[in-house]
Structure formats: C-alpha cells, structure tokens
Image (cartoon, rainbow, N blue to C red; front, side, top):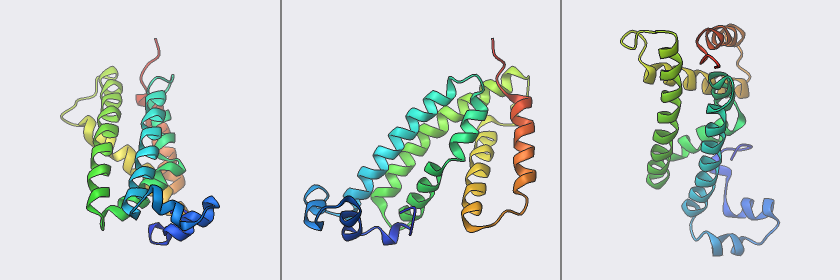
Length: 169
C-alpha cells in the first residue's frame, strides 16, 4: 500500500511479497476487506502503543509531533483513502481515530493549562487537530516532492512546541 497505493494491494501481490501462494492468503483472509482490516487493526494498535509511550516522555508534544510525522501516518492516510470506498474500513478508522484523538487532545489540554492558555481562544481539540493535520500534510506533500513552506512550518511548530511543552517536574 505504501509503495503503490491501496488499489495495487491485491491478494496476488500480497502473496508474492509474503512468498506464499495466493490461495493461502485467501485461506486466512477470505476477502480483501478482511486483510485490510487485519493490517489496519495491527497498525492502529501499534500506533496507540507508540502514542502511549510518547505521552510519558519528557517532551510529549514533541513526541506526538514526531509520531504524526512518521511513515506510519502515511499508511494511515492510505487507509483513509481506502475508507472512501469501503464502509468496514471507514468505521474501523473512525473508532481508532477517536481513541487516538482523545489521548492527544488530553495531552494538548495539559500543556495549554500548564501555560494558562485560554481554552475559549485556543480549544485543545482544535489545537490537537492542527498539530496532527499539519504533520500529516507535510509528510504527504514531501512524498509528492512538494516542499513550499515546509521549512517555515517546521520552524513555527518547533518554536511553539518548545513554548507550550508540558513542564517537567
């Protein structure tokens, strides 16, 4: 999926990559949706574990930025594209996104509260969404060879991550 997109992820290509016969793929995953869901769930659970680890680091906002800027986020975006065509994938993504987003919002809320930021002016859910979305857009655009404004955006984020990072005890 990362190399050629979700449309190129056929049972034959998966079997070839795994070094098995296509019939074995179909034995364990009767439909491609079954395979997609298994991959999505495994990746999402691994990402939630990485997020839990990021939230206990000395600089959790920085760690969340790195997590959202990683190649796992690129695979997540590929699944989001797939979800436009597959209801089963859509509902699974929504469930994981909700869990991931809640934890991220909580971290942003803690950071903003520690710096006496007005939640009316800067709602934690919105600030969390901006952080996540910008990280993913930069990743997606870099993959396409687009870099306009990336250095400036990265510098902006770095300044504000330092400014609003959760103080260590």
